[in-house]
Image (cartoon, rainbow, N blue to C red; front, side):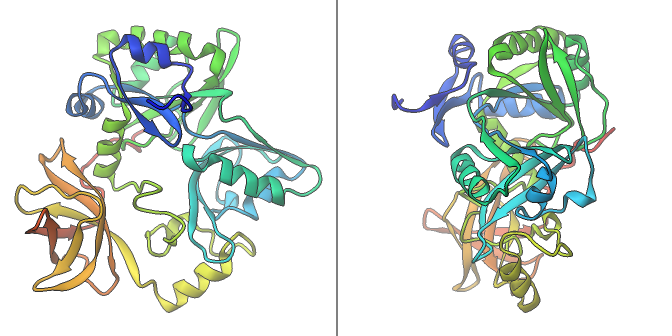
Length: 367
């Protein structure tokens, strides 16, 4: 592994558990421990714990901080309020392309915590810091906090045993105390299952990780790597920045219009995405399910029979839950949402059905 990669404060714990590592957004992170399928199934059936400390952490504070965030990022904080979380987008001001997708945690009108993707944290920070008005401070805390994701139907039982608050509504968060350190307990995640993300100071991360694993022993908790996180999110149809979405993809094309505050008077990229919405996007992100045994992979071409090229696969994997190949693809908007298409799988034309994700039923919104 390249020596310049950043490491999580939990790196030693992952090594002791025999993790296999990979590079994610400039960080050396665990890809898997016991195996991707086993870890995936543990989350779907009981509970798993992920280290996602590579995610960015940007704090926006000062008089009118929430108003500033609302005037730059796509979604409308007016739809929620303090104590709630929201999925939003940082769009390019000129093109409307997706610079990053972000979770915002609305603490109060003068304090918003943003969690971008690891690879885009610096870019998002620089854009916000450059645009911040007097009285609003934007600070980068990428390495100052750890993020643990405890995901699965038994996640409440595990965290309650650790002494952390549970049971709050989906897309809300509670500020708690763990061994004298502040921990934000968020009802969010990237797996589609009921679960929580714990944002804690890096100094307490190992003790919190150990406590969660110990408390979860009776519930079959499994440490999970980012390989399982990818198969879980693909089953939900959650887009991954850098594959399914990016600077050349707009929220209209990605079918993320629900994450745009269309009635807001101001946000980066507003004119571009409004004009495209009125005209109609030329592409759309769709789900694919194999009708046979083929497994799609990124950049495989998608066509109508006989040879009408529609686009390409952006994410593809074997679904451990469905036991068949699934994926996401950016294709021409003219294709029907229930069409059968051909995917070029290593020179073979394999038949797939276009579907609307999610591919599986989950417990993400259960209260």
